Image (cartoon, rainbow, N blue to C red; front, side):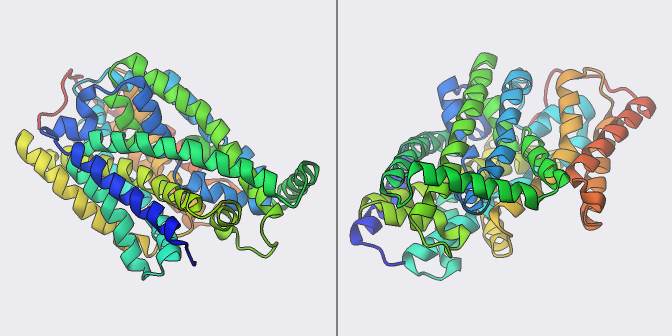
Amino acid sequence: MSLHPLDLAAVAGYFVLMGVLGYFTRRTRTFSEFATGKHSVPAVMVFASLAATIVGPGFSVGVSSKSWDQGFLFYFLAVTFSIQILITGLLFAPRLAQHRDCNTLGDVMRKRYGAFSHLLTGILSVGLCVGFTAIMGKVGGSMLHMITGWPLMYCLIAVTGTTALLTFAGGLRATIATEGMQFSMIAIVIPITLLLGVGQSSLSMAELSDKASELTSASFKGMTAWQMFGIAISFMLGEVLIPPYANRALSAKTQAASKSGFLMAGVFVVVWLAIVAAFGIVAHGILPADTAPDDVFVKAGQAILPVGVFGLLLATIVAVVMSSQEACLNAAASSLVRDIISIFIHPGEKWSLLLAKGGTLVLAALAIFVAQFAPSIIDGLLFLYAIWAPCMIVPLIAALYLDKAKPLAGWLSILGGGAASWAWQAAKEPGAVPAILIGIAASLVCFGIGQLLGRSKVTTTESQPI
């Protein structure tokens, strides 16, 4: 991609700004501050940080590429994600925020189920967050490769490495500060690009509407009911209280702040997905019909925007990637220390912070390696959803609502749900029944068995000491 110097300057300016923000938010003195910002984040920052984390490349570039081929079908399927965020805000986030002595999901699970479930939660949390970081990094690296022509590996290192350094320097505080700025860029630049695209489109509004109806109708006919249901339910359940979201709930200043932040983010997602889906439709009046779907977002932006301003769009796309990566790396490093290392040793506050900072860099390097083998955005997300939800939804919700949940129920539900989902995926989902549903059903059955056969655990009011 040939870029004007002004566009390159805009992208370079973004990285400089990130460096400045990282410098001014670098003073993190305790592990609790690194992991949850000392439980002091106000509602508006919970919202901005959560929204920036949600709006990763899957819910921007990915949705636009799908709407280019499928009209608004994918919007109708993906918008179920907002239902999850709203339910979390109403039912789960405030209950998480009650656990002022917890820094991770693993801490909450330990209070209800004991050390083994704590460890399993930590392993799943770290693995999931590394997977998300790798998928986001591949998108960001590919974008930087298009911009600069540098080798893809160098681009992967540049994007994920910059994110890792920001997270390393300031933990959650740096993450939330940069995500607030990134959210502002996302919420301004991309909607303006859509409006300008409507004005420059060679198709009238009536013609664009007809095109959307045609693509949506054809896509509906090309998918079975089970396929559509599977995608919709995966978006609705797949990211329930994943570590980056749970950390936002735990970091909130009050239960009310946690609830408000999630509810605002849920409403925002409905509007946001409509914007990026519409962008894929409008692009039909901007780009040739043979344009590759994955290139639609960037090429349409280049055709619509003047030089310099297009650079802002590219910087915004990089911000979309980095905002999600920051949240995932911070959650992964926190979970690595709190939910895995601290199971076996008690490193103390100072060493926990050092281990979390070092873990950020190690996990970022692992994500860069994994990114080379990552599938497409949407496929990668759906794969991770089919692992997390069957393992964690049932025991985690029970941990928030049941005071007498038994240890056997916790770890049996995690292992049983994960094994069932994995096996169903390996069998190519017989009858087109989604693996995520089979896994959650198995997890529920295993939890019930554990509750019947297991021994009670005395519920503690404190999490494991570091």
